[in-house]
Length: 166
Image 1 (cartoon, rainbow, N blue to C red):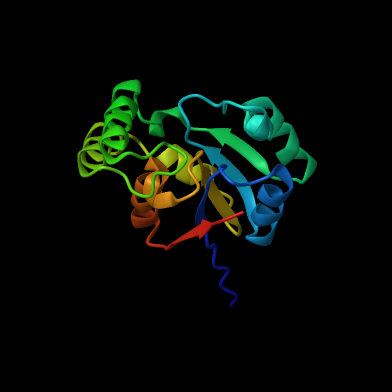
Image 2: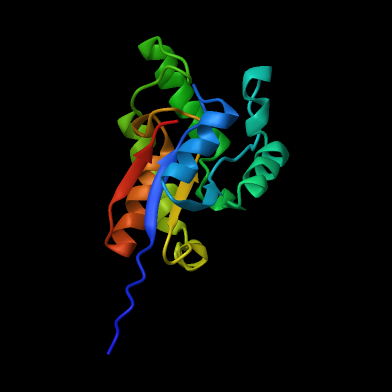
């Protein structure tokens, strides 16, 4: 009797500090077959990151055979984002240089978003023998809500999370 194990891999990836080429290479090197965008607004300001705006990003992913899905229900609300921005201002850091989330933001994101979210549709969408990467903009996962979402999904799957740095 042959037993086939289906292992769903989980990763996170950010946009800042990456070029589209490095971003796509990193996804391919990590065996990513699905990118799950967890941004509320699927655009990034500035020409440097224009490639990460939803339509351009989806087109680039299609070219390399990687699927794309948007799960806005895992995005922080505008109010939560403003809470983090206020903490960033107190700490004297900007969104692109943040290294950690504020404890209040993390607690509220977990309570207001994750505890209310039904993760089953996302988990069912994940390819069984490949990696799914949660995408947001911050380079460091500890500075982004995607790390909290990934931890909740990993717990449901009893797996680990790989953080990809393009």
